[in-house]
Length: 147
Image 1 (cartoon, rainbow, N blue to C red):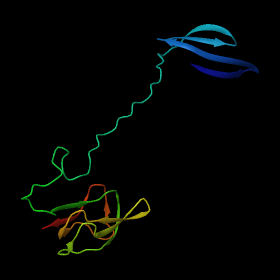
Image 2 (cartoon, rainbow, N blue to C red; image 1 turned 90 degrees about the vertical axis):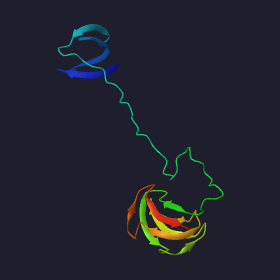
Image 3 (cartoon, rainbow, N blue to C red; image 1 turned 180 degrees about the vertical axis):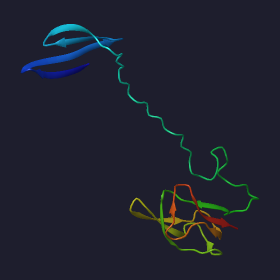
Image 4 (cartoon, rainbow, N blue to C red; image 1 turned 45 degrees about the vertical axis):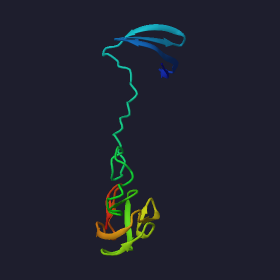
């Protein structure tokens, strides 16, 4: 289990703990095995169990929801969400602007890198939920695009 080296009054001792059950420890001192009674019950150390919280995607639709819209529904309405945590450096659009897919909406600094957030929907900017200097988390709503 564990090995120790002791020097007691100039004498060297090599001690190895072989086994511990209840309050009896089996130790080997310089090659000789002894059974030693320990006053308090020793507990073996346990490796901690890593517990992770449930992670859910930051998309706006549930995984069971269809990814395409019906032919009669309005196109382009929805929300632009933050792809990662960071700080807003610049906003390139204003409310009422018409945007197409791929248009640059804002600049996000994340992990010391500047990232463009582009429109993935076509429509009119209904509202801008952030301003320059705001800190955002992954999945935070940044811009609402409507028809």
